[in-house]
Length: 446
Image (cartoon, rainbow, N blue to C red; front, side, top):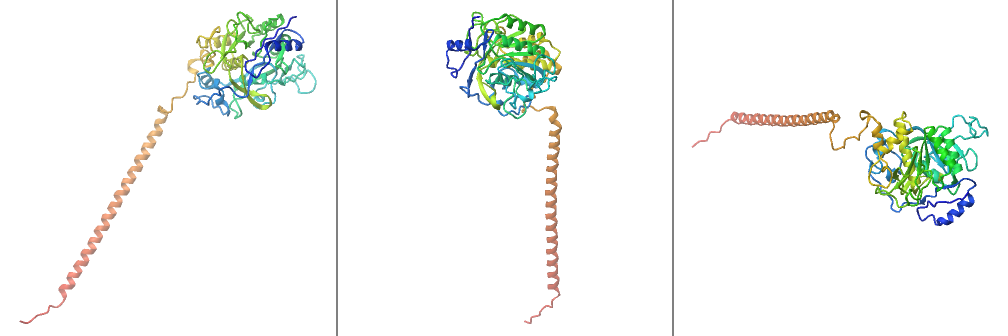
């Protein structure tokens, strides 16, 4: 079977040519057609986003959230309005990628745990065909330890659901979720459609509602399409990266984003100013766009790093779907998809609908009486502040009256002292006069 690789590199950190990458992948791929996810990795963005003031929303104590431009206010993707409604819940999400750093402190609290499996006993306790799959499964090495060896999957997982409000690092679009780690890409972030198809079926069979596929390949194999159809028949949504070649998917499609199944959402990447990223694929197969340039998220070893690409845009959409599913657990996959797409901003991007707006999507499914608006600005006085103002006024008036009374009392006391002093002087004068009149008068002769 001929194997062709697609270079998804977007930054100067990947120096190999597309042809060299293709040859390397062909030599490594053991089966199936090639897929990959070598997104651009940078130690810091070209122009680091300046910290911005956040609108009133759920209290985010994560120290680096101000560096996450996509989550600032409502401008980029409606996060502030969304977080006033929900910050996530027990929604099971499969991250089918290079694995996840299982010990990362911002991810470990949100990892899915298989309730039927006993860790490390070498037995398939729940009888699902996979031994010790406590947090997911590794289809590269064929074991129950989907630990990331590349960093790509860890970064993707953090965008979806790094633990929010915990005072650590960053926050995901969803602050809480159940992240199912499924490793199908090796240490070079390369894999095959066979592994991806196996990962999809595992996720579906183990209860995932949403699958994130931040990977792409040029070959639409039947096994991969069948796995996508299997997910659809079980009510599971798939969010897929559109690809990083800067091309129109109508002429150069990538898969699984370009599959025609309606449970697949292909995602292009946007920049901080709302435009399409120069690396992003677009057109037919790209259902919507989301922030994907200079995205800060979790990294191997408990750290954080910036990456760029449609691999970063897809998990923004996956996180938005987690919020929708948490707010409206009664919605099926079609209801979630329809709400998400109905809320997109139709701003002229070359995608099928528009740019992600999770706040607008939630507004479409939450009754108006239950919607939480932003608090009134501090400069506007609310009726709840009136009693406090009246109390303060009464206190000020009482203090003023007391001062006046004290001053009047002091004046009266001063006048009383003056009267007493005057009377004392008068008595002394009278006494002197009396003494003078009692003395004998001298008579002088002429």
